[in-house]
Length: 310
Ligand SMILES: Cc1cc2nc3c(=O)[nH]c(=O)nc-3n(C[C@H](O)[C@H](O)[C@H](O)COP(=O)(O)OP(=O)(O)OC[C@H]3O[C@@H](n4cnc5c(N)ncnc54)[C@H](O)[C@@H]3O)c2cc1C
Image (cartoon, rainbow, N blue to C red; front, side, top):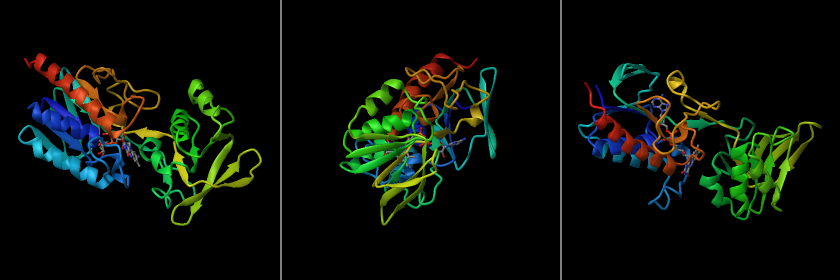
C-alpha cells in the first residue's frame, strides 16, 4: 500500500514527485509521459529561474529532477496510463493496463490538451506564427498585427493580454454574440481602439512563407472569404482536460475539469487532490501547475500523517 499515488508527469506531477520524495512519503508515480504540454513549445520564457528553455529541454530537466530525488520513496511507473481510480473504504485502487495499485491518497495531475484549429495550413504553421498560448508566446509578437480565434473567456483574455503590446488584435468568433465570455472582459477589450471583432466568421486557411502572414476568414452569413493580414494567430477554441478516468470518482465542472479548493487543492472526495490544468483553476501555466502541486503536497503530507492506518 502506497501512502500516495501521483498520476501525471507534467510540471504538476513532477513537482509533486520531488516534494513527495523529500517528505519521504511512500509514493507511486504513474505517468504516460514526462514533460507535459509545453514539450511542443520551441521556447519557454516564463519558467521561473530559467531565462529561456525549449519544451524538450524542460521535459528532460523535469525528468532529471524527479529521478535525482525519487530514491526509495517514489516508485516511477513511466509509460503507464491510469485508466480508473476507485475507492473502497479508505483505500484507492489505481488501475493501468500494466497492473493495479493501492494507495491511501491520490493526486491527479493529468493536465489536458488544446483543441487544434483544423483548417489548411494550421498544423504547417504551428510554432511559425500560429500558437495555442497567448501568455506564453504573446510577447514575441509585440508591435505586430495578430488574430485571436475563439470568442469565449480564453479568447478575450488572450486578446486583453495581446492588446498591451500588439499593433492590432482581430478576434474571430463563429457566433453572433459573445455570450460565452465574461461581460466585463468583453466590454473592456471591445473598447480598446486597436481591437476589432469579426462575429459569425471562421478561419478557412492559414498561409505564409516561412512564417504566417495571412489568415483567410469566411463570413458565415455571406460565405465571402477575405484575407486578413496577420503575423500571429492565437487559437483559443477550447481544451480537453484528461479527467475521464476519474469522472465517476470526483466532481467535475461541465467542462470536465476537477473542482478543487484553491487553498489546498482538495477535491470533492476525501483523500483525492488535483493540481494543474486538469483542475478548475482559472489560469493554466507551468508555474501555476507546479505551485498547485506543491500546495497539494503540503496538505497531503499533513493529511496522511494525521490519518494513520488502523
Ligand atoms: C503549445 C503550448 C505551449 C505552452 N507554453 C507555455 C509556456 O511557455 N509557459 C507556460 O507557463 N505554460 C505554457 N503552456 C501551458 C502549460 O504547458 C500547461 O499549463 C502545463 O503543462 C500544465 O501542466 P500539468 O502538469 O497540469 O499538465 P500537462 O502538462 O498536461 O501534463 C499532464 C501529464 O500527465 C500525463 N497523463 C495524462 N493522462 C494520464 C493518465 N491517465 N495516466 C497517466 N499519465 C497521464 C501526460 O502524459 C502528461 O505528461 C503551453 C501549453 C501549450 C499547449
